[in-house]
Amino acid sequence: MSNVVLVGTQWGDEGKGKITDLIAGDFDYVVRYQGGNNAGHTVVHNGVSLALHLMPSGVMYENTVPVIGNGVVIDPAALVKEMTLLEQEGVSCKNLKISCNAHVIMPYHKDLDGADEKRLGKNSIGTTKRGIGPCYQDKAARKGIRVQDLMDEKIFRLKLEAALAQKNPILDKIYGLHTYTVDEIVEEYLPYARIMQRYMAETTQLLNDALRAGKSILFEGAQATMLDIDHGTYPYVTSSSCGAGGAAIGTGVGPMAIDKVIGIMKAYTTRVGGGPFPTEQRFPENGGTGEEAEVGELLCSVGHEYGVTTGRKRRCGWFDGVIAKYAVDVNGLTDIALTKLDVLSEFDTIKVCVAYEYEGKRYDYLPMQQSVLFHSQPIYVELPGWKGVDISGCRTFEELPENAQKYVNYLEEFSGARISMISVAPERDCTIIR
Ligand code: GDP
Ligand code: IMO
Ligand code: MG
Image (tube, rainbow, N blue to C red; front, side, top):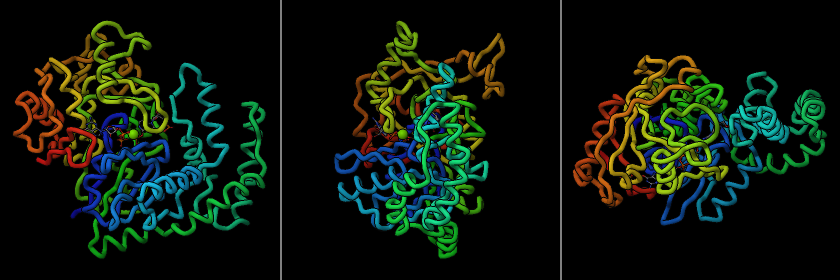
């Protein structure tokens, strides 16, 4: 098996967990390369649905080594809780490797995340409030605390002292929040550190040695292209490089080691939090009326579009071909895994956005300016549906209703990358491999 990056192509929640879980058993290593427990990846196993936040989906296979790469930010409490829950479900975490260079989310990162969102008011990003942005801020500012720092109490105390000298005045004077002492954080974090120490590794060396030995690696992206700090709808993005390029940065493996990039694409679009979303079919509570609100509500209820991490209702809309083409380019997609095609079985006709229009000008590609994207109107083509046909039992492309085949072929041709997998239900085996 070659080395593969699996990446979200929209605004997250495309079904990365399901597809990773489907193919992870074919790999020796499955590595998360960015993000933190803002992610929520669902894997359904023997009828049981499990939500993974920090743990790479490869944990479900005994012979696959799950690795948390250097590009990830780790909340130790969340990690230990997730490991405990997995062990309770009979999923062993014994093979886990954690990069000694991954950054650690501190209590003040979470406080600052929440406080900053409050300050932004109606312009808030709608973050998961897990402390992701503030932790990456400290990393970029070269003031972060890494996993290796937790392992030496003396160093941990020194770094914390320096951090708190800056954070406490901000917490207190700007936000009127509780401040921290070094002792209270050390007391909370040291027990987690003792657990994490068992799994800590030099993962860059480990992965490169594995490549030399002919082993295979699956790089599991979290979030998605349109949430990428550089290539997404900035500032309505997360704070890491979610795209395929992030796989090399977040693991220490050279880009030439990557053979294949699979983009996970939902057959329609969803987004959690604020920011532009041209094909959104607004819910009544967000101003949608008539057909728009009906479509939005139907996609949400049939697709069970509620956040795995925060439980928030996901904004829903039609498939956006402009974004699909962009994701193919930005990630160098070799393949697309199209997910949740079954959800569209509820519609007479299905719309696909093929371009945008703004002030009389047509945009076939993503407009450079944020303000243009914000106010763009989608230009749709309308394709016939396959209403009422249950496609969840289909296992070959030919078994799909003719109009479903045509829909898939249309998206493939429009996007410019091969749709080599089609997911028709949450379970691992409910997938068509083309
Ligand atoms: P991720 O963050 O990209 O891993 O995606 P999430 O797990 O947050 O959200 C995807 C949701 O869709 C989960 O509830 C999955 O179980 C579910 N799902 C995945 N693939 C399919 C599919 O083909 N059909 C349906 N109906 N649900 C799916
Ligand atoms: P998975 O991996 C969907 C969104 C948040 C918010 C923005 C910034 O399950 O696809 P953050 O807490 O990261 O600073 O929030 O990014 N967001 C996600 N949306 N799926 C995710 O992960 C997300 N992770 C973050 O809603 O708009
Ligand atoms: Mg998710």
